[in-house]
Amino acid sequence: MDILKSKGTSSDWRVSILLFCLVAAVCGQIRYSVPEEMRKGLFVGDVAKDLGLDVERLVSGRARLVIDDDNQYVALNQNKGHIVVNERIDREKLCAKKSPCSFSLEIVLEDPLELFSITIEIQDINDHAPSFPKKEIHLEISESTPTGTVFLLDSAADPDVGINSLQSYSLKENRHFILKQHTRTDGSKYAEMMLQTGLDRETQSEHALVLTAVDGGEPQRSGTVRIHIAVLDANDNAPVFTQSVYKASVLENVLQGTVIAKVSAVDVDQGYNGNVTYYFTHLEEDSSCPFEINSCTGEVKLIGDIDYEVSPNYEINLQAKDPWGVVGVSKLIIDIADVNDNSPIITMASYSGKISEDSLPGTVVALISVQDKDSGKNGQVHLNIDENLPFKIKSSLRNYYTLVTEQILDREKLSKYNITLTAKDEGFPALLSRKTVVLDVTDINDNAPNFSQSVYRTQVIENNSPGVALLQIHATDPDQGQNARVSYFLIDGEVNGNPVSTYFSMNTESGVIQSLRSLDFEQVKEYKIRVRAQDGGSPPLNSNTTVIVRVQDQNDNPPQVLYPVQ
Image (cartoon, rainbow, N blue to C red; front, side, top):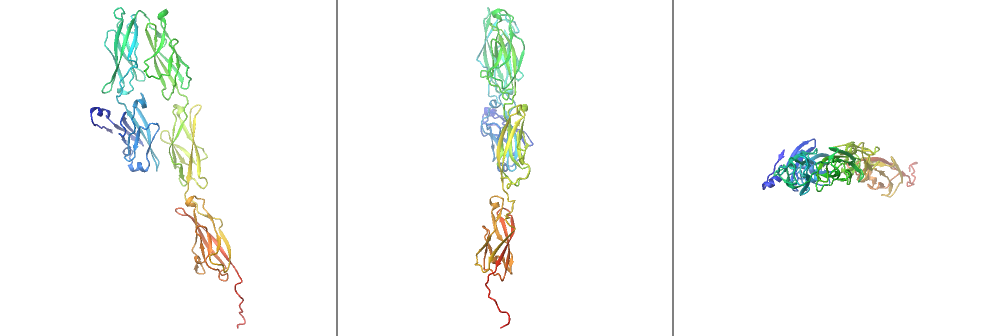
């Protein structure tokens, strides 16, 4: 589905051409396309619609974007379910010459946890013209230079890609030189100037040409450089390199100052005319080439930082020049070998730090992102935790893992876990990172109050005063908070046909049992009372016990004469 927005002038239309393109949405993965240099707030994609989600689900699930990069190029409008531009995107800054240019992110939803992968491709616009590193090129060419001799020219640079990048060169028409264009293995183009008609210094000692580089954008952009040629007297042999292509390989952690390669060219001329000097050519003006060549010996040394993760190889054009400006050309290809110099990075993409003790095995505790900038086995990472813990790690989407429960938890046995995550790559020697997180187990009401005795016994002398405390019972509950708050109650029963509550009372909070009336040994010698302890959970749990109250006799009745009857 392509969406085309057109407003304002034709130039505005060109900037806004083909704003957004939904490429695919399969199994929780979508792809959008957006031109670079778009204004903040412009629409990128309707993720709610494309993922088949309600906007209410985005709000209730606290939807958020998880982006690996520090730059927040896009943002999520949670209320509309739209992804919009958050800051200006410069494709050349983001990806340089890499094409296609894209970055990935994830949308995380909670309750339940869901993860969707999104790739946003940045389309190039023709916002750069080809440019040469210098305003002028100065060449010195001997009049004895044979026809067919090739002169390598400085390359123009165009940070755009595809059709918007540099497409061709043209040379101002002249009778001595023609232009040859070539394409390197990386797709970049360079030009050579070939002598097709011999030079005569005595006829014309200088020549002025114009080299033009054009891209394929619309409108087309171009850049020019002037070529000044000084014709020298006879030096009829050009230096020739011993190899047409030199190759070298170096580890990315090699020390600066190390000699990477040595090149050599031979000029069969004798004496002064046979002296050769070496140069790098076609380097851009702001090039940060980490190598230098000794102009006398041809030794190539490392002078800067190299990083396989930034640039895995370098292709450098070589030039050997004799004192009269006659040159020979070759090429040096340097491959950078990866070393395991980046430790894995552990990021908690989603983690609350709490879990209920009644969570079923397989409940997701955390979503974890693990990144390693190295490549190959050096970038292959395994995430593990202590095997003695009731949790396990499961592999998820891309470089994501989930931490899930492996068995039922019991807060009364262990209320807190210190979980150490260990990410280890497959490099040699292996590098690892650790991150410790604390997980609190929250309580549920899964324990009933427990009496310290199954039967309580006490004694009271008859004719006691009403309100006297007989005994205090106590029950404990290993739960937490309101689930552990215990209340005490008398269970309905009868004594001599009267409710037990007419004889005794129970303090709900303290568990103290009191006598409500004076007891008479001659009427009832022993009372059996049923008592319940109940916690404050929802639903509440309870347990029962028995309290036996024995009445002790007092000499409170005089003897009566039953016989003889008076």
